[in-house]
Image (cartoon, rainbow, N blue to C red; front, side, top):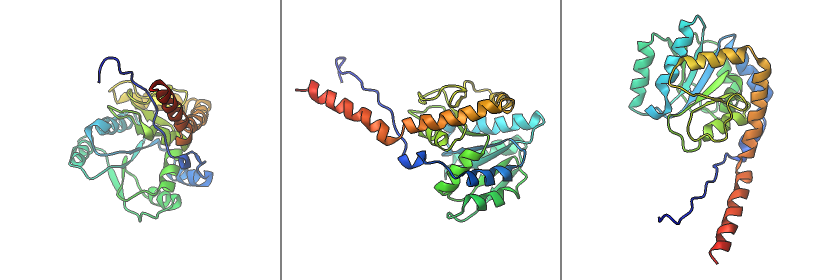
Length: 241
């Protein structure tokens, strides 16, 4: 491409079904199973760019501060899983494993969660979309802060469920700190602790984040995004004639 070629910047989008409201009963069932423990979730490939080690260190930091945090995690088949496992052991975190059928409901997951005691809970099964969406909406935060992210669809999917998305510093142009998401600004694992403490003291802010997050996700559903693509194509067609 030459210097005279103009770049077009267009957003990605999430499936419209993600914008449907998660059943409140599903969210409540899971939330009750967490008790009063600060609970977070991370669903991503086991890869260094996904900042797994930051997440593990952040949970250890919260524990060292006298809290009883929990990280629910779902990874992938990758050699990097051994690196993550080694960090969990090095930080002295207790880990539990849950294995359920892929058809498990939020209630099934809640029952299993209620039996765990560790700071790390590994979901060793395919989590169906209904259960995943309820999980996103129920936890105190979803750690979707990749090191390098071209756009960040996971953050939008979390927002669509009424969840609190912790996103990274690159790609998520839709994220406004403490308005519709939490933007992790540093490599310091203490940032999760301080953000959580801020939100715990401000239930009104948590409610506003969840509401604004849902509204943001709806703006980035594919039917809305395609309008921008259509306008661009029409403009490109007009310029080429």
